[in-house]
Image 1 (cartoon, rainbow, N blue to C red):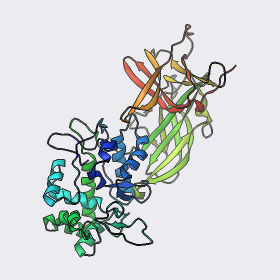
Image 2: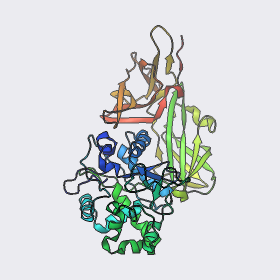
Image 3: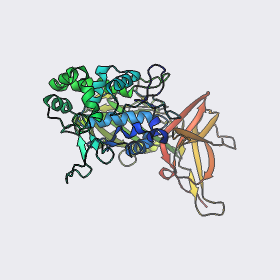
Image 4: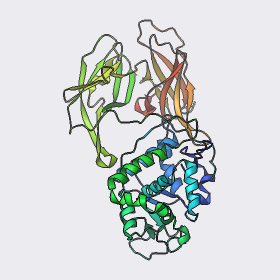
Length: 471
């Protein structure tokens, strides 16, 4: 974020930190970056490998729907919340940079005026600068190996990395960064370090006569609410022209990973539904509508798992429906099909105020897809895609995730051919096909319908529904 220039609108949260040029800068060597899983205590160390490790972990999270920069923002928010910090508003829509940004990250050896000017360039006042530094330094510390001018060798057998922590609860979000500073008991290496030139926290915290830090020490709630606001602003600091979404909050009931596959005259329908903050193990019934007027079709779905999130503040209960738990959904009559679903949770209808949750059964993979191995023509995969009568797409294609030269997620399209023979007008689906070199990667189905591109189904491997081609 610190590359942002609020005057010309350049820099900010755009994942430019993934570029080697930025990671090689001296200012990045002075940065502190989070390491570790979001459901564990979060640790900080210098950027010798911190930034590259973080990007390597979060890069696979990014897809066509979530940029690398969005993944970094989500990772920061989840890490803070799961270490006991405040809930932070999340907006999506960040755009990944295609080249490095200009330098501009503050360094601990700089004077106070330089720090104030740097944060002002980013769009933060002096008081907000104090808050951001305090909020960030409630975690972590400084390691001797990378900063011998700040931290001496500690010779502590319980701390073999010789990390001098910012406060005594370095893996927990709390206001001890402020209480220990105000009480004079702090061991923060950027406050009481032996090299006063690099005691940047000391200069920053005291720049308003300790008024801000005193207020944080007096009130844990004020510290938490201030951090929630400032950290949300931090991750929302984006280049000019990038429009973020409204705040995204979880739906109480949300279907996920809905998959439809045509198997002869029936449709195999499977997926999950996630319930947010519900009573333990409720009874959940799935209802679906179809093309022939059915509105009371229903099955009971079974809980698969429950996870806690946001430091234990919330629970997410996942229910599966598939061939094992709900075989009726795995053999839907293809003619009747399915158009939308709803849920009854402990007797209460959950249907988005009467809208329901739409299900598209217009285009899907077919189980007639198959693969060959070891024959004279080489290993091949034949993908068959079923298109419902009356849909009339101009294109049908496989979508495969890929990366461009700057690691941004992109989609590679492979066109399928329409049926070569006339389709029986009474048939519910027509089959489009393509043969490619054998590939068990994850694909989705895409199509152009009335000039609009659509995507159908979650990423699916040929192993999920295909078989060996008949000889």
